[in-house]
Image (cartoon, rainbow, N blue to C red):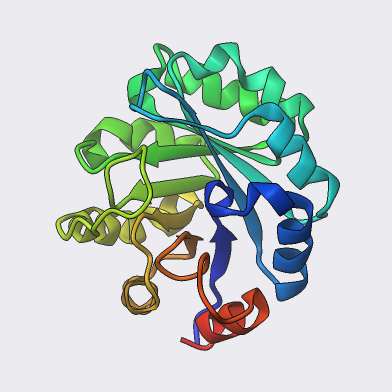
Amino acid sequence: MKEKLLCPSMMCADYGALKDDVIALDKAGVDIFHCDVMDGTFVPNMTMGIMDIKTIRKYTDKLVDVHLMIENPSTKIDLFIDAGVDLIYIHPEAERYVVKTLAYIKSKGKLAGIAVNPDTSIETIHEMLNLVDYVMVMSVNPGFAGQQFIDFTKDKIKKLVAMKETYDFKLVIDGAMSPEKIKEMNELGADGYILGTSALFGKEETYQQLIKELREL
């Protein structure tokens, strides 16, 4: 059974009880707390602010990542570093000098990640793989929860699996990650999964039960 990185998408959490959700997820054994930040420009939605991320950071020692769905992320990187995140994902379409921004993230002692939209080709990001610690494939269009898995993204996932050892990155999948899809992606060779409403949030079972079940897939 291949080990999985299980990463709850905190935009789906209960913001009336964020502290309690973080503590419960931490105790359930999640690996990375995933924070989506949207500016209403790069994607047509707005979510999660610095104070939300600081709250998450305060109540866990696990890795905290931030997925920046914003224009010109280089101008905001230090805000998130100061908030205590460990891993920063950026979109190549949103940044003029992507390699420079990835190098800056790493120079600050943080993990650098690239997020790959369904309509972004592997060829577009190939050179960037020299600098990244994580690649996150979007299997839905970025910006909203509750979408259907886009089937042709599996071809991209397969290509990236074949490149992991050469470039030494972890491959994470974000979007419509139901238990069935997690099992399928795990068999393809992916490393981690962003958990939203398809597998974790809004269920009758406890986080502890759900995470245990996902581990055993």
